[in-house]
Length: 168
Length: 426
Image (cartoon, rainbow over all chains, first blue to last red; front, side, top):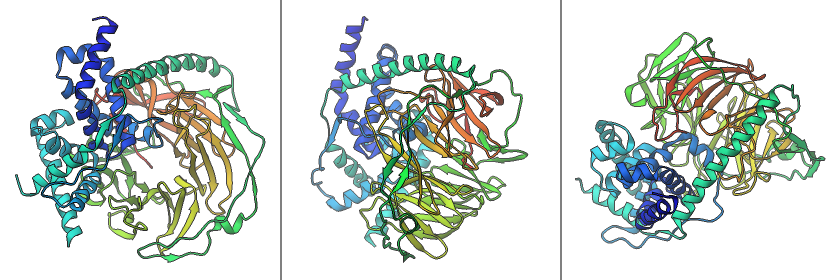
């Protein structure tokens, strides 16, 4: 595959998956600037390794793993702490009114999700938003299924507790 | 699946629905990859230059001092806070510096270049007095503490009392000398700050509160954010019983006397404080997308509020040396157009001069990913070379010896991620 083909192939993949990847980046970070940065960094790494990614792995699984790991990287968090990209790659509009759930309750729940420790939040997003199994989540997080269970149960417990405190 | 699960799924779905890609993402990703490659190439050229620079003893490094810049020191305002606090009279910043002050602004330009750190290779030949974590065990001198299994992959450790404070899945967790969990101080991603006495800690929690706790993890005092919409506090550190924290996004910080509850409002967002020297560092302005020339940090005397200097350049300050005589900074900052400095830069606090820098010819080659500068003026650094890292002790003259054996990266998918060593924060 020459450079032009490689570029075209990568571009086709990104165009097909960009909305889903942008949403994942936003849920993992809870912040547009950080999501912008995370998305571009992750996809830059994917592009560099595109020949391998498309040949031997499911691109989505690889990209998810890169995004989660980048987001967990303390070094990366330090580096981007004071950044604000010049022009954004994503925009975040006010969410629509939900069906069956009070809007303020939904917003509260989202705020509490953002307050979770990074690994717990990642586990919650992968399990409840991406609908990954515990084994798939463990693969992305690079941990055991037991650890995924632990992250998830602690996160759910914390969210329940914070939501009941808020409504008490 | 409990009744809570659909609610959680719905909340996540709802938040994600408003997210849209608004530009050519593939093009931006390709451009970033190109930019990363350019940086690596640029760093290679810089690295070659640094090798030549080492041969010449350079006392004054890569800084140009501007003519003194007059920056008026305006009065600060006291603020009311919720919680157990009283409103303070105007801060010492205002009372002791009411008139315009001549403050040097220093430009970090990268030329002519400071002394260069020269990592060693080979087997372990020395030791370090600084604590560090490896393979889930904390080491400091003859002390070893085996962490509980769920905390062994932590990326933060600090000595606290006879045990350690580590970040874990539940939050900042106190582990005793026996390796058992004692308490969780706060659930937050913010970096906690252990006081100079090693017996107290300042942490921000997920609800925006600032928490002051003892070495057992027992909260002694807490400070609530000013309102529910407030971003809360970002801990900068402790000087005695005064806790310093930034109020993110406000351009201000607080000095909170944890014994009396008095809160003073200070100018600037403090990111670091150092107890022995009584110095603090505030971030003054950003320069995203630029060359870093407008990214400035301000060094202040915490007792008087006097600005000592402003340093502008492509550097991000990471911490003080233990005695406060130096600052450690990172020169590989994402968001700046070019990287002028290496991955570790040592700046002298007295005059803002760069005295040492480190960083290999490219990302991943002799890159410094973790550093502490002790009061003995010995650096303990984690050196990244290719797919492995080791721990080294280095002098400010740039000479190093290996104190921790070379080990593979714990997670090759995150080449710039933490580990296998974690250098203690205090």
